[in-house]
Amino acid sequence: MCRTSGNLKRYANYMKTRFTILNISAILFIFGCIIFSVFNYQELSKEEGWGIVAMIGLIGIGTLLLGIDFLIQRLFTKKWVINTIGGIIFLITALLILKN
Image 1 (tube, rainbow, N blue to C red):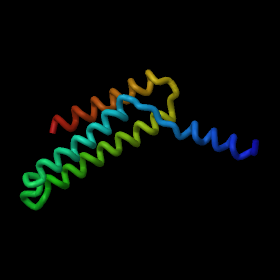
Image 2: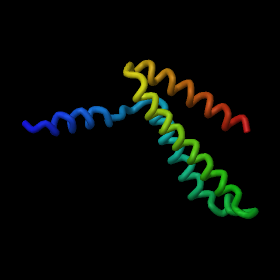
Image 3: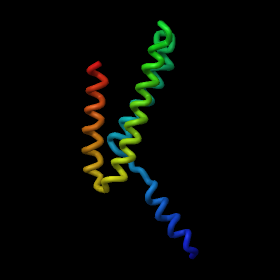
Image 4: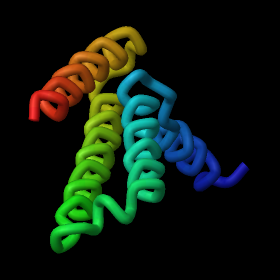
């Protein structure tokens, strides 16, 4: 067995991401934004297209949530801690989006 195969296995274990509350919620949020944009394109593109810009911003928020989830999974190892922190972050984000 060569020396690099051990490093490769360690790297493969490091890069594994698990499904979490924040991960799944962010993916569903992004898909929801894309589907809404496709079906309501005519309405969103009125008045200089600011609706499309808003949808791109919301997709950016979803992408940011995926990045935060990735960092949380790197910092913590216990799944219940990861899901609790991710759930709180998603609830706060959802409330801030729905507030406006």
